[in-house]
Length: 320
Image 1: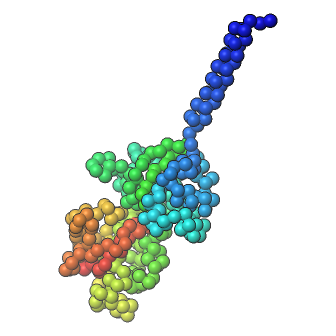
Image 2: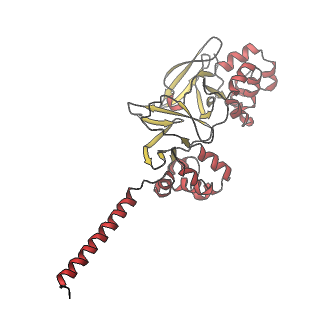
């Protein structure tokens, strides 16, 4: 018969080995990195994003390899008008899928990525172009996408990187012209003027990102208030091409400028004489003033993104 001490020793060794085995398995499980899909499912700040992913059956897409995801938090969805899960579920599936695809990019995009500068164009998996800016110093240091601040950067997951953002990104229009054409109730007069200038229409309809522009677009109310020759369609069609070209070119400038990138000073317009636009900042809010305007125009809708540039809707026709 074995001594009791020998039996106890054998039992203790067995328990110790079992404990080590369980501990190793637990450590192994804890060391397994989460996918982007897992992070979104578990993070309490993404309840509305989770609802959108579920509604669009998009979870598997977020498990693909080598992704960068700009993930809107709950505050972002609420600011966009989606207060709860019910409001997300009320959206068509195709719309949600399109929105989600615009937040996902192939390949790593980190806050220290050397290829990033100011408004670097990057194509989403949905095909739309987003503009990412890296700022390395000052109070605004960090990443922005389409002028939206990254609030939590470089969250490493097993299949890429997640950045938290505080605004939902809306998929881009293919071109500036198509963005205006999608809202004729507000832009029928400016579209009529653009169509009179074939070279401008071509520039606004190209989907190339090589030479983007920023354009300040007056809506129909602004055109009607501007007087001759912009009051109505008949007046626009009767106006001289020289006059229309001068006015329309004065509303555009080369490059991409989001509203939070407008600083006090002057912008060189695409007017034939390269006339200057004045940017005035009051209480951190930018306004735009033409040479012949008595007051500055307010920006009624900012940061409408197209593959070939940025649209800001303004309250006045700008006069060179």
